[in-house]
Image (tube, rainbow, N blue to C red):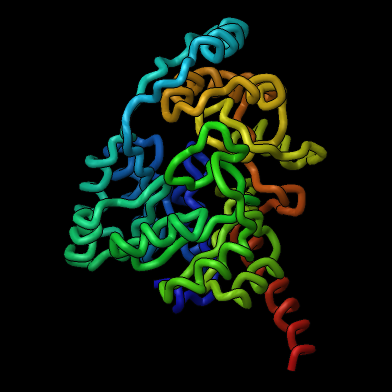
Length: 352
């Protein structure tokens, strides 16, 4: 699946705009692999993006889906709603409805089946064993990858028949792929660094492992390969790529640097790593564990903040090492990563 890539690099499925068909096509053309983000899209919009990507590249690519199982949260959203309502009034928009939904999971699963997407990855949980069987049984025998943040989640993914695991360290930007968010826990649950988690997971399964979390340098890619991964998945490294759909104010905040990152539920109701801005500083302490209700509440407000170039209310998702990421054409970023990875591999010759 990923073992035969010309360069063991995967561009992450960054939902909400950053990962575009153009970015996926550019990275695959450079020898890597790309995942389209299916999260937050309608089934029709996802189908259109798959078609667009197929027009841009003849190489295989994947699609990521959110597993939004469960039911409506029983947390009290009242205080959080009022905080965001004040921002909505300032920006001249209405807050979104804080409702629960399953991100049109079933409809989007049918899209990837119909489109015969060769690799489908899942975040926030595992697909059912029946869904895995359906993907395995289609004409392309689609492979299934599951994002895991702990050894216990890895065991559950193996049990449903996953073909590969995306091992996500706490260093990663945006949402943690936690199967369940523990309201009282910072970051929503146990926090493992990517190298530690790779070693722990590789000790309990022979499935191919893809490492992700704070990887922005070619030396990072070499490090996770040495630790047992078959490929490295990078998101933050491509946020300022020319082909990325990252909003201008988000790009500028990344380029300016100087902001720390922190986990917050303020924007979505799920722990996500963001640059610290006013929303993170002021809203995180009282933000409830209520996804996707909070995400639906804040979506139009964050969109208005983006249009107004107001970075203090936007979800500036990024990994811990964002300041080391570059900009420019995706092909140039891949070329730099390749050079750095080769240099790191040369340094390993001291071990001979």
